[in-house]
Amino acid sequence: MADTHSFKVAVVTPSGEVFTYPNATLVVLHTTDGELGLMANHNPVISALTTSEMKIENQAEDYVERLAINGGFTEFSDNTLTVVADAAEKAEEIDVNRAERARDRAKRRLQEAQDQREQQLAEAALSRAITRIHAASNK
Image 1 (spheres, rainbow, N blue to C red):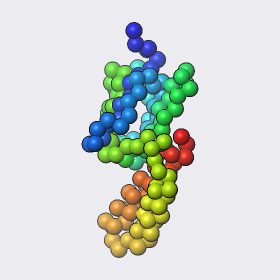
Image 2: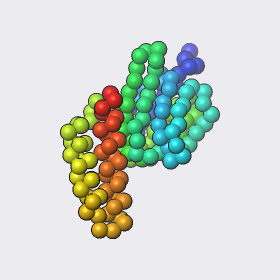
Image 3: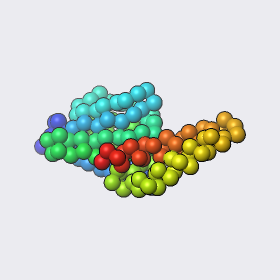
C-alpha cells in the first residue's frame, strides 16, 4: 500500500529524465507566481517555473535533494509531481568553479550589453549561474 504522506517526484528535460524519487514529503520550487510548497494530497497544480533551486525532502528518511532548474513547468496531481524543465542539474553534479566562471562572464556581458536583447540574455545567463552556485552550495 502506498504511503499517504509521500508522493512521487520526476524531473525531465529534453535530454531525458534527470531525477526521480518515490517518497517525497515536501517539495519547494519557484513558479512565476512565487514560491510553491507541495505535500502529499495537495490539490492539483499546473504552473510555469522560474530559473531557481528546487528542494525535495523526506524528513523521516533524513533525505534532502537540491536541483538547479532552468525554467519549464510543473504539474501535480494524483500524488505525482512532474517537472518538465528546459534544463536541470542535481546539486552534487554541478561544477561550482564552472558555474562561477559563467557568473563572471554573465556579469561582464551585462555591463557591456548594447541593447535590451543583449541585456535580457545576460540577465538570464546570470540567473542560471547563480542558481547553480546556490543549489551546489546547499547540497
